[in-house]
Image (cartoon, rainbow, N blue to C red; front, side):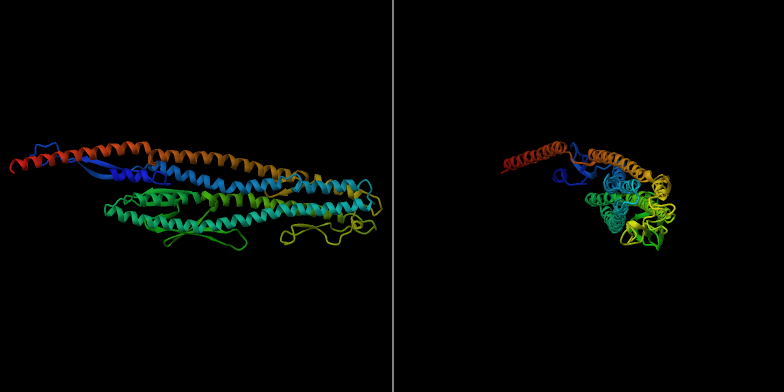
Length: 441
């Protein structure tokens, strides 16, 4: 009992340590004896653990992992897309403002050049934001790929610890330290993916994904892989023994599920919407320019080039285009602004975007920012809730399994008193025995 208390006190600051205790049982007197008994025996060592609280601890870590990984990406994207000076709206507004300004004097070379300058700036705004989404896609995929080896290493560790614990229990050894190690590994796994844990009669624990696919059973562990597909996003595959499972990575929970949800539910649709807006806007502008005439009376030429596969940028002004080639005239007459007015009116036309549907060009970016802001606020609120629930789960776990220094101090005094009392009995017995021997000396 003293050794057990000493172990608890020594590990009072050890993360994941579960306090232990001794179960003492009275040893009765020998048959026919007239004594009170023969003291106590340690029937077993107790591990103070509540399985319900363990499960709550692991589930809360899965939710926290999912929300924690997603929020930095949402915050960055919201700041970039919603920036008043570098966002897409700023570039589109400047472009149409330049067209409006050119209407004052459509023959003015500086005003016409300003339209090209504004178109180039708008292109850069599109490219800048689109590049951020591309960088995020790369980063999210790297994080997802990095999580897979961690998951496989942890499941293998849990399976190995299962085997050690079963062996220790079979020989009657105290396996509490091994169980603590296993629970720590399970908690790390829960941060990466949502899991369900089942206790087995032999002391091992079976672990599965929340959808039911097995991760650990006894000393067997599954292997998870992220397989690349041609023309599509990587798919998650799980192999357990001779069985294989296709897994929906947006439903696995934890960090892996949170990243996949953000990638497929928010980031890729947003990226496609930016591309949709750039492509449809450039098509409308180019079509309208083609319907007019430039300063020399020649048919209009395209202003913008749209190429989502280009390494130089999603959108750019046609190289070599001069201000005199801008087709502002509707009939070829210098100073006519018929086509220019039609160009200005494009701002009020509709575009269809992947993530928000059909909207006005002038409102498209605002609605994209609004939707992203809602997603970010919801995730931030859920992150706060997940943090609170995790803290509560840790406190509940500690109330049962954590070491209480005051309680251990009381136990220490009680065990010391027991020890000292027994030593006093032995000392008295020795004195009586010596006195008896002296009577016959």
